[in-house]
Length: 227
Image (cartoon, rainbow, N blue to C red; front, side, top):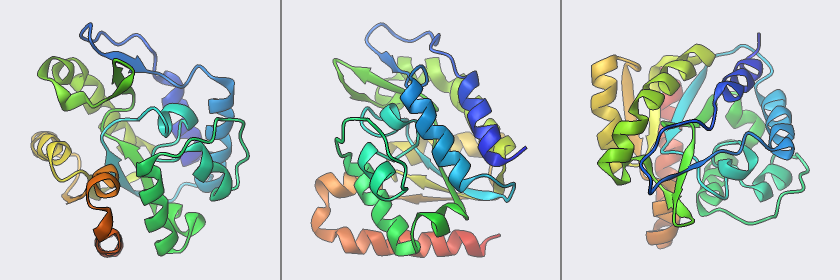
């Protein structure tokens, strides 16, 4: 079974029946035909093999990226224009996707990048509150409610075919502070390396964009060197 088949099989296993605090709504894109079509094409194109990949963990899917396309940090624009997968989604850009595909381009493009890396999230499904993106760590009740799903998700990513030698973490603040002790407790990965979150860079530090892109380039090289 290829990595693509295992990814799709795992996504099919996710169900919108999570018990959440009343103020949090689950973001579940996997009941849409267009989303499944996008995922099948994307993963079939880039992961139709069984070579191990290096995982890059975000927080949880957002409304305009994976919450639409089913592909982490890939909005409908990047899906079509960079990955070559036509789609009928509303072409609304996502800041994080913009940054991610800049460092993917710096690496050598999507085909070269996805040959080595697999972008995912700590929590496989996302959340909204009052119609806006809501991260799993934004309140302790939500964090406690989804932690079993997060642990299962991380272990499942290892089963998909990512290496346990090293992983990159997008988010040097709360995402890192959550994941580091969790990894220490469960021993998922031998080494973790945190990086600034793409949205934080694009929203608050855009004048230093090239500096952060260089940080990512160095981290990607470092991770490949750990294998």
